[in-house]
Image (cartoon, rainbow, N blue to C red; front, side):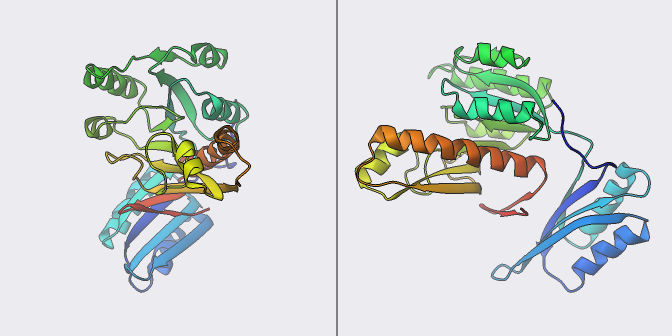
Length: 287
């Protein structure tokens, strides 16, 4: 597995806060004054909220960590929130799966081809069905059954695995369980979920059946950050496909799976490339 990375390590900063004059110039000058070379810069202003957002990537002149710490301190001094990542430090990702394999296999193939800039650390599942596929890709598989009466204990085991693997991200590749608030607080990293509808429509179970019963003309898929409220987290990516009265529920499922794969893969890639900035229950995606 190979990942395309810049010839030299870069720093990528995501920052946001109250808008004020000169922010673009001040961040650029800070980098220039220290011999850095800006490769990409993009910004956005939420006019209604008066919030400024920026993604900036640059080659530092010397020690990347020193620049990362210094830039973070500088931006916080402007009254803004900031995170800085280094391009040569690949995030560690753990996949959560159940029995449905299409999103899972798609992510594995993309990772193997070098499309996802990350290290896949392992796979956690509440069923044993996908163990052989996981082992084919040389990854550890952990079967953690989740029962109604033992869900809290199962989540404790899952959190322990995430800490063992030092996970930076969890991806729910059609993991058919609701994560509790205690899990989300304890896992120590963001969680991306794929939901097989165009949220906020048809949240919860059997969305394709709901869509078919409603006679919709479009079906969709939504990748979002998981929160304690079911299917209500900040949306990262969505896409739709037209349907009509001739399509059965089975047709909707088939068409929807193609959407689910591409939408989830795009959302994961954007997250790994540090292009997603969350504020409130919304996101700014620097694509």
